[in-house]
Image (cartoon, rainbow, N blue to C red):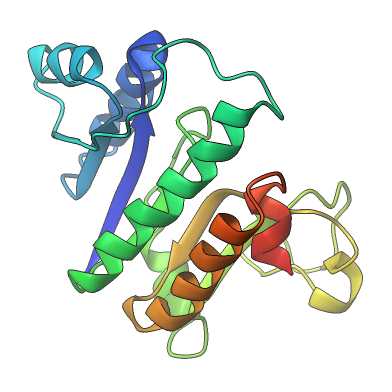
Length: 182
């Protein structure tokens, strides 16, 4: 059920091209790139990138960090996640500038059945002695920001994601990333 997903607007379509090129280089076919506007849909489709129309209703201009549009982008992310979970998918959702350089499926499968949600953190030093194939030690990394620019969600976490979405709606001036951690 694992599907690799990102999304772009027309101003960032080149991010989608690069992201998809990395996936294709790995010979993976379980991926989609969401188009946040009609122009992005046309651009991605013209390059035969598996895409879908997110109908975001947001500006096609650049999203400055912390702006109202940036915060609305977080709400669109929750909508995408909930749609995928309701379809029974286990998404690996990344920001378009968070490239996938190897198939994450073997790593995810090693964490099953315990791991329902996996996210990276902004902890800038190793929390384990075992190398790159281990999870961060939660007790050491918990104080760092959780970077939801790369996340895995198992389909049975729908209730938690609905709660996160409700928090994003209730607190439109707060960052979705912080609300996710909370």
